[in-house]
Image 1 (tube, rainbow over the protein chains, first blue to last red):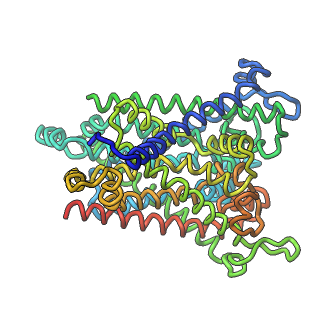
Image 2 (image 1 turned 90 degrees about the horizontal axis):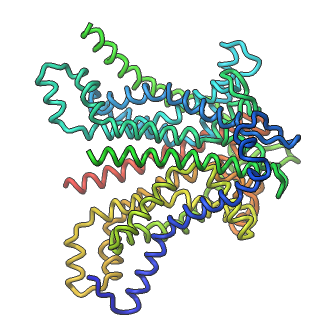
Length: 289
Length: 279
């Protein structure tokens, strides 16, 4: 097998190796570029003033991104708080209780939800949700953190459901049978045994949801009002992602403003790597069990 | 008490599933209700003209097709090659785990960051102009993991006896891969393609600063190097900057139809694969 005679074989081996390394190259390029372009502004502004500065006013050269960081964290937390119970309940129903036909229908719905482009979520949010929120809470504008949280909730739902469902389906039958034999009802078994046995998969699904929520840009820029305020539930807010989108198109080439936007990208990247690391830890623990 | 708890959980479960499906039904219904009537032949077959004060999305439909073509032409050989390397060649576990780690990492990176890096790398460093080519190259990074994962999965299901048979008959490794392994992995590759096309069609954040905002009608080769908005970006421009929700909803209908079509075909192929494996 390992006897590579002939230049043709050698050539193709090399080609395939290069293809294989392409992904590694992409990750390296992304990390290096974000570091190189993100550090200058942080240096100029000062790490503390950049990360913990409460005011972002690019026209006055004030670049503190604390409002964006907090908004991203609050927004993600809100979406997780609303999305996780809804997602897990649906996943249990889908994996355990639903008759096959109904499960298939729900499955298709979940896949379609995952396939809807984020701008379509944004448009729906902008024209349905925002006026609705404005009306019921009697606000001057419904474009606020709450609207963004609701849109994010719907967007992370399909990921939570499908990953949790896979984990729930993988729970060994013996566990459930043992619980049923001991007199527990089906529902008790699902919620006390199956969920516990599928714990690492469910946690992984939540972490993935967090990753999606924190990285989403286009849907929430359309519903969140886009003013660099400190976050409040009915206030117009800006996320890490939407801060980049909203100023990049007019920031002058080489200006501190533009560099600061790259630094926001770097901060976002670090958040994502942290989440990836967590995910890796959880799934490794899950497979070691 | 026990009965009551059980009742709550049972109802909660059904309610949650109902809400999930209801959300989808509401979103699709709303889009169809508000968008279908604005889909006119004129909208689909012309470009936006400020002189005549008409709006057309033909350029954006074409741009979406262009960017799918460019991305897939580049990503397919690389992605399939990477999967072949991982399953057929790689003997060093260390290299395999590095490559797997890289593809997993790529999957988790948000599209706005791909957009930032794509802008820095392809337009600033390599000197490309904003356009389909820079956008397509950015999307290559983004959908690479999808192609690799799906191809790899279906390569793993090709029985080893096929490989051994081909090698025993005197075939070289490359010849074996080309004639025995890859043809048997076609459906996985196809699934990867469909999923990728779906992602490309729905992508917007990665394209804002790489493919650009242009709304003019361009030929394929001109579009490669000039600012060209895809359907999603056009939807964003019309909704967020022009406040023209009617056109946005019409575009949303088109996008939903494409998504639906892709989803159905992906589901059909997966079912076929399953049937074949069981049969």
